[in-house]
Image (cartoon, rainbow, N blue to C red):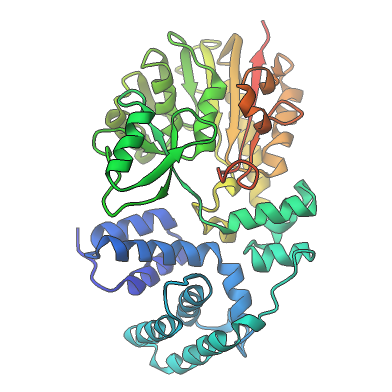
Length: 451
């Protein structure tokens, strides 16, 4: 593996270029950080710049447009990329002095052979320094403009949020999606107790607390200088608290047979194994071989011995499984990922409403193709990390119309009382970052098959 040389802003620039060319931000960033020779402090700056620019692109572009005499869409991509990097530092990074943000951006422009544009970039950024307080940010009462320009959401997504909830709630959700997601870890109870792991985090210089809902989750509020303890030992899995609640809703018992229909990368699969102390038979399906390997690697690292991975594309019903043979089926379906756009920030810019319709149809097909494997009295849990109507309530209503032998259960009757604020009037599960301690936005519905 070749080593990447360069300073943090150059590496961040290169990662942003790769994302614009179609790479996933997390994969491109991980690859760059593994190959560079930066210290931990500079690696964190690279991460901050990449995710920050992608997450707040709408806000950044609104600010730049106030000082740029040309439409941003007509600028050379290299120039706009540099302006966004410089603007993000000026708007959001108090620890970076204004002169350092401007000068480092100009130096990077010259390093990239953008000498002719250096003066143009310098003028815009210095105008931003002088007149930042004069930027006409929309008032929260102008909810559509506020979501787009202050909260950095594309117009189509702003409309979707406004459709789902009243203006005040829409504003709070938009503001929460503007901020970075918390670092949540699911403690692997096959190997260590949560209280013991919290002690090890503290001994390593990390500040952490218990999650608000999930009994095996910890939230790392401040990273220490060193790595998190227990990676090679399999003590934890990086997993948002909302994601870690989904396997609990499945209510698997030792000795039962489980189908995890869309299993990769395997966080929920391995959690089911942990919840049953490796005493449930889990068949984990995944379409892509490279993602199937992630399940295998994760199971090995975490000590999960009850998982049988199998490659299969669920646009067809699996012909190697026996009908009505599973006590529990989890469909953690492919979705728009709107609930996790803080973690995959480029998603807000490369998705659209047409894609939601296509995904809703795919979710319908997958549900139809696994429904026949639920035994009478068994449970089918549908979950997605999104909040769009077409992928949540609408998808559930369509499934019930097409499957009279399934009924929707009221999850309020089966979850602990302290989780009831996560359950809707319809009995489905919904989490939102602005309501539930910063966790991701997830949705889940549980069906029971009639005898």
